[in-house]
Length: 228
Image 1: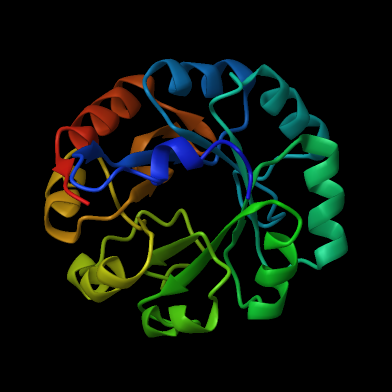
Image 2: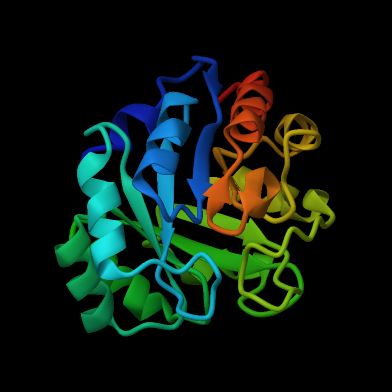
């Protein structure tokens, strides 16, 4: 397992803590650094070519090299091969891998064996379903997403977050899908996820974040204290 998350997710028993915030779909260095300065814990980079937030290896490398050491980059992949993912990891210095398609438990396990933090997405509207987390025992985060939009993620579609309540009791949950500065505090308060993931909910245009919205989102998310 990579070094970054240990201090933030291995919380001592009885200690209250804030939810981790991942700002996803960054495409520019300055925009990513502004998100970090606003309090983002994780920066997400999308390597899915059909996404309007897709970044090239060169773009991603420029961003990751500019990030502080304690803020990792998460690469988002959709149904890519192990070799392709690892080539991107090596080229861009990724610490976290997000599998946002129909990837197998075996792929997640192989990536975890490479000392990577693995996030696997599960969907309320399509497979793999929210109840399938037990098949992916090597996943460090289990992301709950709607999965009904045109793209695998980043569709700004809100959904019934209560469907993820059971997940939050069993796994290290990352809640996603339609979150924004107005609804994130309520979602965190009700679902108690370990992390939240936002992209379109804080954007100015696709791939460019509105830092005022990012700041408001992070403040709202972290205003709720979680009890382990």
